[in-house]
Image (tube, rainbow, N blue to C red; front, top):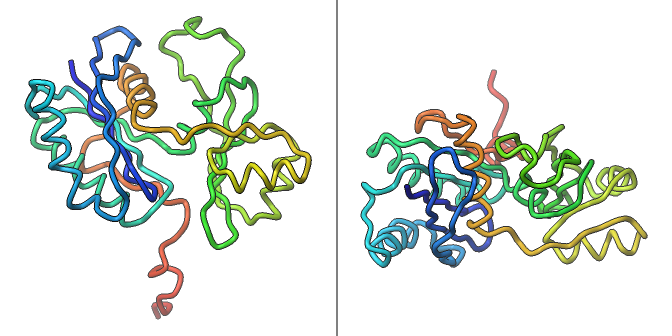
Length: 234
């Protein structure tokens, strides 16, 4: 079975093609393709077709999808979600919607309470409050690897106050430097690419935690400028 994973939430994105097996947690990521930011609408569908063709497959061979649903770029997320919605609807295949904050937290080996953090711009931070059980990997093969307590948009001051309570995991260098300056616990990781999304997505699909194309929505956390600055309705 084939799983396609995509992430168009940031300045740059990626997609991954993976082999998966029913009732097994193992995910064999065959290839990850980088996507240049700003051109997702032009690149995504042709790159998917090229990736499948390169490995001798067609769209009809796809068994499931995993997609980053946010937080991130409003435009980028819309492009990625629209493409996956269209493919899943035509092929009648399940979709796993993955939070980028969850992918950040999952990329860390730290156990217990974790704050996943991403720079949201405008002096604000996307923060995911997660908890990982103390079992060793494989102890509970199909249990969720993380429990989410909340995902919020915080000011830098609010974020620093929260960060004093636990370990912060982030791929953002500037955030990591800020935390180290404050002498707070910080783990800087590589930005999670679509191989991570594929693994998280398959885990979720195995649990039956999927959405239909019409149910797939972006997890922006922040309101759009149009919502913020539009005049109130009377």
